Length: 335
Ligand code: C5P
Image 1 (tube, rainbow, N blue to C red):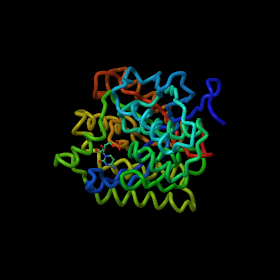
Image 2: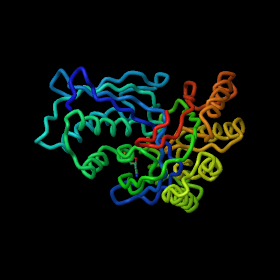
Image 3: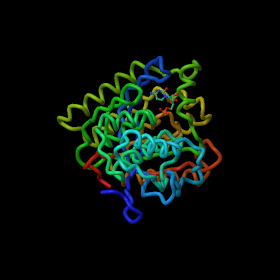
Image 4: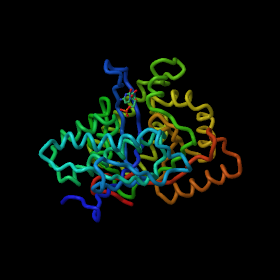
């Protein structure tokens, strides 16, 4: 079925959380070898793709988080780049007409939640559907990897172990039972992923506490979620929150780039009485909860604390605070 102006292809583009992020040495191509357990979240952008009236692909962005949406921010270029990558992958045989994309932005940008990469994966997949183009999954993956390191993960769409530069995606078993929930707090500061990796390579103060233990935690969680028998439940994840919260090799780099982030994290640990981790290169902080109700209650407390002026969150504005769920992936969405 091809898209026309009346029937756009619509995709949800979820945010992701790194439950673990182990970073190896820099490779010869400049990228770092990763070992990361990544999960998709209920928090999602919405992308719709239709046949463009004009001769070129176009992108219109609406929404945005507290004025943080700027076209200069990382990610938006990636939607058009992904449509172009999809066109190349579709080949000459397909009718790859120009696409008008509309992006309703709900995920904060440059936040460690990979919103831009998720938008790109949705654009790639959605454009191929709009054109009714038949492209083999390994060619899709290759096209996705060319757009950005986190993009292949979103093509799969469920919990996964992500390795290499990001192109090796091994599906993991979703959590059984009610989905685990997460409180996210994103300070009003952009962090460039490239800057965080650069700090890791060049500044001794950004060195991880212990690369070895992060790697072990990541391997252990991947093994537990990989066998799927018995599948982990929400409570099992909460029990592991303490080790997961320190299993991010980019945490010290993020603390260097965002003065005040470490202090905020400590304040949140005290306020919430539970471990607080960092997603990706930050600055988004997370805390795990057994249910969405518990995470929503925690989000209210954090917002009240901030409104009362007791939460010193870095950046010029209030932090973005939201409760959301960890999703099971294809066919397993709970929201
Ligand atoms: O691939 P992507 O554009 O998302 O990566 C942004 C930057 O993050 C890269 O330019 C690179 O500096 C860094 N990066 C890395 N190793 C990875 C992924 C990203 O060094 N595995």
